[in-house]
Image (tube, rainbow, N blue to C red; front, side, top):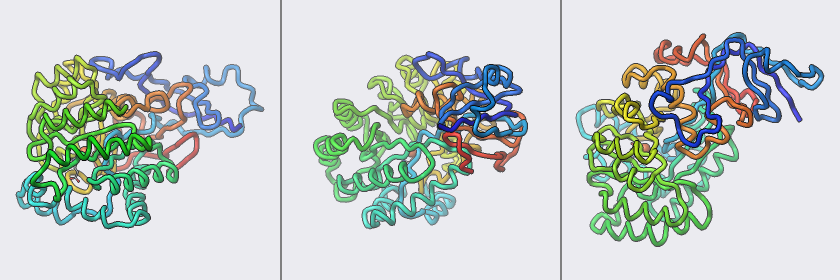
Length: 416
Ligand code: NIG
Ligand code: FE
């Protein structure tokens, strides 16, 4: 057993306690603060946390293997990035230039590019190649403080390639320092070979892909792109109901570009989270609040698509718990930095730094079913934390475009 005592920490953390759901409304902005804080970790898990005085009270000095002074840094839980497509085999920088020149994202997809161009690359990549490329994409995220990350499949769009992606995601989980949560997203686009018969692809997902993924226990969540020209609400409902029947928890890319009623569908089906929501209606927001659906907001995607940000303040006012994510993918948003996302949330969506911190940690953990292990600094959870180069978490927005991070710790070990 290894016991470590971290001291000299100005600790800022949301508190989960015995609560049974993500932090909504005014609760989202409540953060515990210990000015002269300490964390006692045993074998990578937090044994106690609080003021140095309380944590060290009944401690026997001989039982401490290592004492680490964090030098008065603001310390926050390791960031939880609950929405990424970080498993792919090539970048799409050329397509970004097309978007800068005015071609809309969905037009590029309609013309066989976008997600479909990533699908061609992932289908032909050897499994080791896909792993090596994805590992390189992932590694800066740890440097930027992400200690837990969700990764979706969805660039295979056939059973064999989707399974290949999920094996790569499982290997990333085993062979990197981050906790990785896999999501099946076979309904990311209609593959080229089904272009004229999309309902046949919906049937393939329901009858072959989803049962295969469930049979191997390869993903905990099922996600879908509910959007004009991709999957409509009827098709989305069909796929998600089948997924629910097979034991998946649900996520929906909802109202990212157009308001199709995806937010309302998330409420209707009791999804764990709805993603993007740039165009979500008031009624959709209320449906989410009524069902406790977490809004996974991706402000770096709005930035990259040059769209207005999601209405985060409205969501918090109406009682929807808000989480923040990068959406890291080769197309709509190639962002590896949670500090960048947090600063956009504060400066562009008008969240307070406390609300943004809860969004990037505890609420994000709830949205991927990881709340028992990560998302706050509380006894029993993993000793995952980030020591910031500043006195408060506001430094994440104050130090614009920088990396105000001194060190990143996973299970009590320094990893960046
Ligand atoms: O969340 N909208 C669908 N999926 C991703 C983009 C994936 C891609 O462009 O490769 C998103 O924006
Ligand atoms: Fe996405």
